[in-house]
Length: 260
Length: 250
Image 1 (cartoon, chains in turn cyan, green):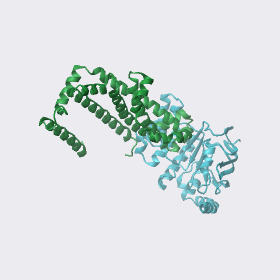
Image 2 (tube, one colour):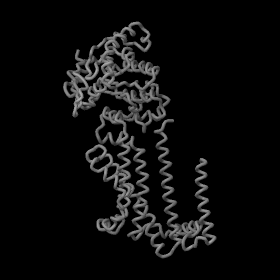
Image 3 (cartoon, chains in turn cyan, red):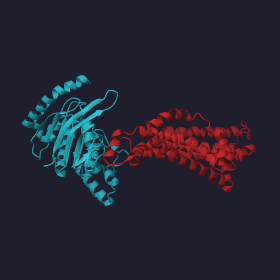
Image 4 (cartoon, chains in turn cyan, orange):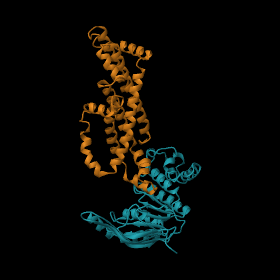
């Protein structure tokens, strides 16, 4: 079967007086409906990888193919992105934030109401539909951003440390919601995170990246059932998997630290 | 009303009463300042007579045109410059010295360019106001978090749509500051220009009354401008507060 997204030899060099080789070469193929997590030491080019995959930046070399079409410096329809920073629009209510993409796509107002209503319900934002982002907690704002992406029915969802700014309990619960969303939409998910437990708990496969320039040191399959949730963090194989990833990552993190 | 609000009202009322007392007692002669109560009375008479209605309408129309033009041009130029750093680097030092230029010095030139009608007054109001709008638009757009612009790109918005749907709405509170300044500068520019050369308008009537020692009309019109500008500014302030409330953390 053809992969849903494929990266071949993707490299990104930031030009300048002393060019910075940030990423690659990266080869990666994601199956349709797969949940893939990327972990790596800080500054290894994880976010660059996401930008390039989303079409927010062009690769210096190599190619990205999404649903048989090359991605190059433009975000193709069907890709949704959730960022680490709060990307909710502060001048719009929760409802209008979530409706943003649909309205831009000129969906009929009845359809917008239906879709947004569903997403609000799904993300547990029902009591806050008329609230402005400033009145919500960080976790709630991130839910708004996820809902805003969700209503556009993306087939590939890229998440750049979406729970990075949240506390541990909220992160675990948001992880559960992400798994639920993944199961119900059937979307392919690529999650970038610095939290090993998050990667191990959520993903079908975890790609471990090296220090800059980021490359995959190894890709580890977790073999979780599709119906998993955050309770697996208590299982024995969870500990084994996490420690395996950490063993791979430890040396790289020390290298990255030394360079910083 | 807050304690500060009551105190403020008290101070203003106290000063008005003091002026009233000084004028009535003859400490301040009536050919210098008339008592505030006489100003109010005269204003009522002047407004009721309708004699100055065309002047008031002319001034307000010209101020309105200056505000609207400076907002449209200022926001458009600000948006353009913000996404064109090279041009901005060239112009920035000129912006900084803009308000050092006495616009009224160009009045003869403006008359040559625009004739003797309303346009020179509008032009001065516009020239004073537009830079405040440009500077505040730039300031607001500079503060847009990059992640919001990224989010716009993910949603497939182009340059104009991103400006219209994301960057300008984010910058709105800053642009509103520019708008408030534009209102103030347009009043200053237009009414000031009416003093110099014009055959109608509030500024012209004040100057005319002054030259004819008509203190009753002069102070009535001054009071009118004062009341008008204070009312407009306070309404804008209240509007701004309402707009900002939703952006602030509860």
